[in-house]
Image 1 (cartoon, rainbow, N blue to C red):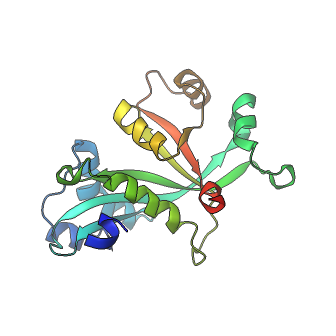
Image 2 (image 1 turned 30 degrees about the horizontal axis):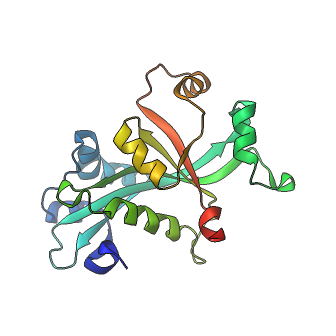
Amino acid sequence: MGFLADKCIFKLLTREVISSCKQFSCGYDDLDEYFLKDSPLWADQMYGKTYCFVLKDDPQTIVCAFSLSNETIRVDLLPSSRKKQFLKTIPKDKRIRRYPAVLIGRLGVDVKFSNKGIGTELMQIIKFWFIEPDNKAAVRYLAVDALNNPHTMNYYEKNGFVCLFKDEEQEASSSRLKLPLKTRYMYFDLIDVIRK
């Protein structure tokens, strides 16, 4: 299937896992700090859960990690042109003001495993996880506040995510944020996976 499926074990990233593993670094200090220090605190407050894949033959090596929490995409706050774009695949009689989503709060691949397609495989796993019949909650979208840099934006775009707002100016205005934006809000429609 792929490296993660064949060579790794899926785990909840707990304090015990963190303390038993070798240093994990995805090359961004903020992300590294989140995974190694902040993620257990977020879990304690029930704000999100963080997961990882470790090597089967070396369980002290974290290959990649990601965090998830609940989210809603509020189309009632979108400018009309973007609202139309978002709603075009939803039947009129099924339209609502907020749509259920899962927020990918953080996602990182250890630098020792970067540029090997692991990030793309991880995103496929996340997508399929939420369309499984035994999934406990209904979710239509994956959402992310992607770091606003070419590398990160390209990763999410390659994996089918689109920006909720047409450009940074529109997002800043609608969200009352200052330019330049540190992140861009993006989403992926899980129904696209089901239709394929």
